[in-house]
Amino acid sequence: MNQQVQFNEQVHLHWDQGWLQFDALMAGHKVPCLITLEELARRWGQPLNEPELVSVAFEQLRFDLEAEAEGLIEDEAFDTQGRIWLGHPAI
Image 1 (cartoon, rainbow, N blue to C red):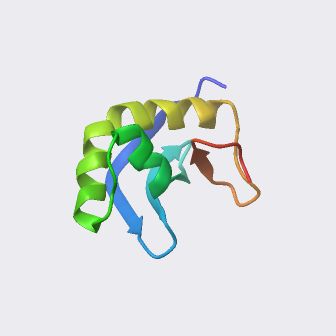
Image 2 (cartoon, rainbow, N blue to C red):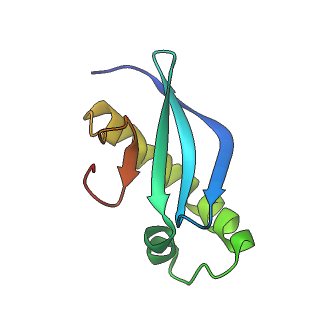
Image 3 (tube, rainbow, N blue to C red):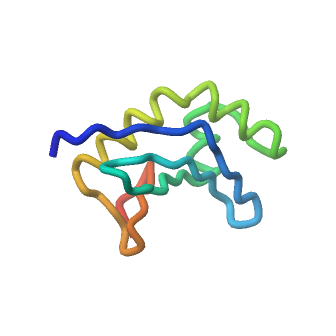
């Protein structure tokens, strides 16, 4: 596909739903990128039992998560709602 993917600094924690969202922009379109808190905790190596820890974990893993999301976007691995899920196949 070879389109430039950019990420903004906004991160949205959906604590009650159990996932975190960060957004990419590709060809002028917003692409929601999601990771479950369980998967984020697994990658970080410790539990995320407080909302404040989620942002710490994300910031430490941001570069790798954005790189993974960019690859999934380029592979067009969108779910039925046009979102990208890290850590498991598109739903």
